[in-house]
Length: 97
Image 1 (spheres, rainbow, N blue to C red):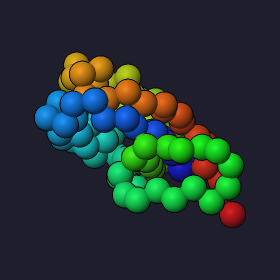
Image 2: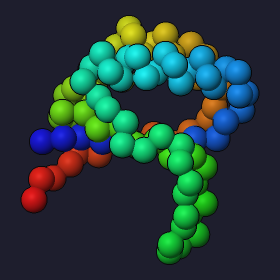
Image 3: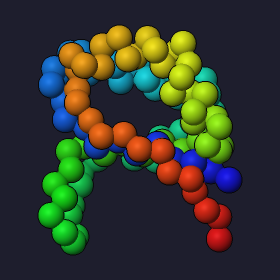
């Protein structure tokens, strides 16, 4: 069953963000993930949530997503994360209907 990593991002430093983004993308691909949304326009339809750019990544399953998050490849991206951005990050188990 697929799993989704969803990130609500606030960019702090554009140059560091590009470094983070490049490293994160390579690590995601190496762990079987693929982007479904990557910073496009966000329109709030209900409620008070005012998210920044949203990133949605699909992994084959929860274990694959967890392995990616704990991987050495992703650790290279995390080296610049705090300079590059702040965020809320969640992992969601998907359901196929």
